[in-house]
Amino acid sequence: MARRGNPPRRQRSLPPLPEMRRVEVGPDGYDYDVRAVAASRAMKTYRCPGCDHEIKPGTAHLVVWPADLGESAVDDRRHWHTACWSNRATRGPTRTWS
Ligand SMILES: [Zn+2]
Image (cartoon, rainbow, N blue to C red; front, side):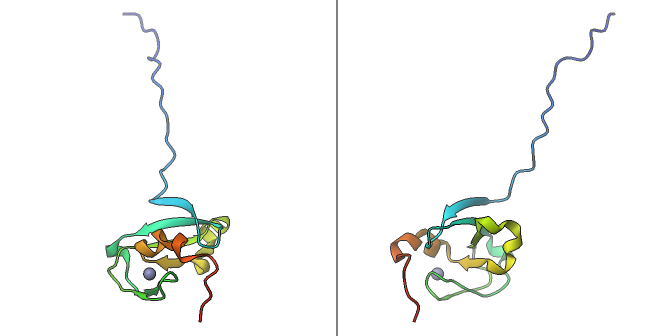
């Protein structure tokens, strides 16, 4: 039997998918990386900048950081309640903190 070489099977090596992650515009108009934190991964108490209330451990929420800074922005990460981040636009970008 004559062999005519390998069938032209295309093997695409897909790049690893990023995690649950997207870029959204933050309340200040800048782009932010947004990543979901599952309840099981939320081990600490954080303070949500949207409502100034605590995010208790075991609460699914979002962590956002400036998109410009990429993964190096660990110190600039902010933890938000999912609902607060969704409603950030209605809070107004120029809210002053007391
Ligand atoms: Zn909140």
